[in-house]
Image (cartoon, rainbow, N blue to C red):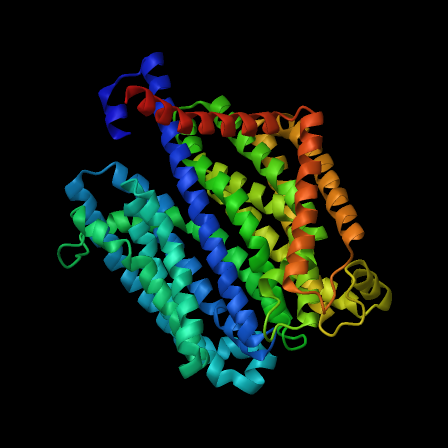
Length: 565
């Protein structure tokens, strides 16, 4: 890219040739990221299944998930200051020797900063946890504090992995970068299977730390091969490091707002019955799978193109790419929402319904999953639009929206919990989600608060983005209503199939649950596809053409080889 700019070849033909090459490279990177995201998500589901089998929704997992809160906040607040979004442009404008000097400076600066913040967090952990999780702290403060302090090592290691990832992506080693979350989950699984039986919860969190170590270690050999880290790092460019921190601060603050909101919801969950934190986290992790595969993949793949188009002053291309990605997110996410809502119990039963994870936990987690799923498209669009604002250099807007969204989430969470005391409001939600009379159902309003806040926040983002750039709503209007109709068809098709087969119960076998849920899911997908086809969906045609093209292209070399033989 640097050679392209320096060469001065600005003719129309060269520009289109360059962009074509960039798009092809972007597609290849997107396929790698999507596949690895799917594989990593499968491992994450396996991880959660093992945890559900060992602990169920109880005190041990409540402690485990609560122990992550302070380390995650430290990682978000400090690690985001040295993210790939900020480091890659710095590498791009430096020579190879300058890149090594800059990386050394970042490593030393980050080490000092994270040691200071993590040290303070380790010291203050008991006091913070006592305030935020009083029920857990009353009986297990010492253990909760120890788990938190161990997990602070994870935050430090993942911060260094952020720095390594910037180099890995800059060198276009997307497969290596994509492998990091895979080995991270493998480390957690190893901790649950191999260390927990001998060391209890401490063994489980040491497995997390080992996963974080693998997360960074897998990238180190290639970085050394590229000429980095062959000597002890030195702090040689303090001005450059401070400039990076200054530019990164709005993004770090925006991410911190999201983490604070999540922190607050789990703190509220900690005031409810034992197992509420576990139910909340299990449901959140489940809805995170389609979000990662759909929303995050499109948003991540679109970012380089958006940044390039805007830097060239091509705002029409910028808006076109944002609209294209948004339409694809809606195309996939809306029917997925319908299927998650209808098949919630089947999904939870198949993935988590084992061992200590009982029928009550299954029903509560399924209900929470349905509520989280309502905001799936909103979360995906939010990831895209926030990256679009970053690409346009407007880093303050995501921070402001995130801060307002965090405040709204906490207000809604507290308000909804207060409404649970009203029999009519509480009974209506329980009846709607078919969890009447279950102990612990109050946690569902926290999932509802999160979903509601996500939807309101993305509406604000969409309106502001349309006001600032113009044409976004008009470009995506048809995709909105087409995907909504397809979602309704998917829900109807899946529900009708389930009604014909029959509901699952506690005595239902895994095979019967998988068969009924799979059949309903297939019918729901076919119904959505039929609606998209009948409405002449542009996205349906584009995806179909892409699949046909790739299949034809993959088949063509085989035919050529045979003919040449």
